[in-house]
Image (tube, rainbow, N blue to C red):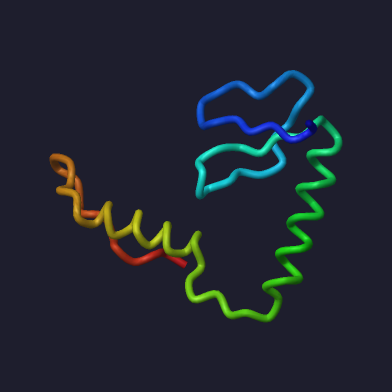
Length: 90
């Protein structure tokens, strides 16, 4: 069988590479080197076409950056330092 599954933290099988990560089962889907890249690209194109035109409610990178800024703003400032600015600098 060409497809192998590796749980989080395990070493990949020899001559195999990760094609994608299955977030629901918390494991990587591995295929032989070369084939893993082709399958990963084909899967990416498939999902891009499948979900084309749908509006994304939130940008994950922006949401992460916003959470980091809010988290830093809630921390007490170090001794003698000014509190961090909660707004991004342009």
